[in-house]
Image (cartoon, rainbow, N blue to C red; front, side):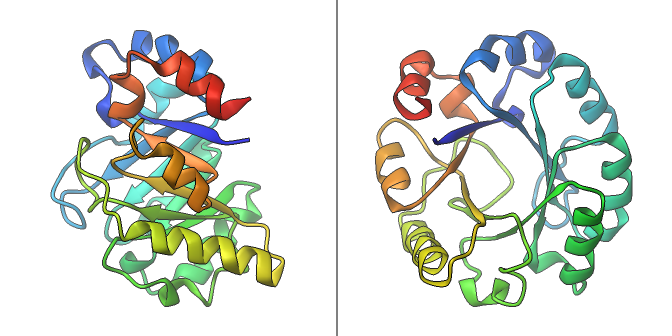
Length: 213
């Protein structure tokens, strides 16, 4: 079954609790983009927002670290009780250590890479992670157009998963909407991270029924 992950970057943050409750029946988890204004050209949610989100929902929370030096944040996120931590391979020289640290605390460890980063950059850790997130836009802002070349990465991950008997999840983030969602799923995506596609979708109930049942 396909999972829908709601990126709150696209929600009405002035009424976050209501926004989460509105989409909660049609999603499987909450995606929190933590940006430092350095690795990506935007500055977003920090620990108080994560704490607030946890009070709004019992759904699993994925903390996506779009930050330089993610090692500074892993311990705090573990203590705050997130369910998954996603780390960019481009941001650290200690990716193996961070994956081990996350998994030792019974939290899912995902690794992600930007559209311009080749898949071979994660080959050394692919057997250690719970999932791989393919960025199908350049990270930083909601509402961008899906980068079609991302489909080749998704297909390759699906091929590797089958060929080598691996059990990682394949997640995709960026520009997914009703026009391309079937293509993304057919390529091999299992977790669809959507912002505008969830919070600004008048057809969310039907979309959810189609892909989650």
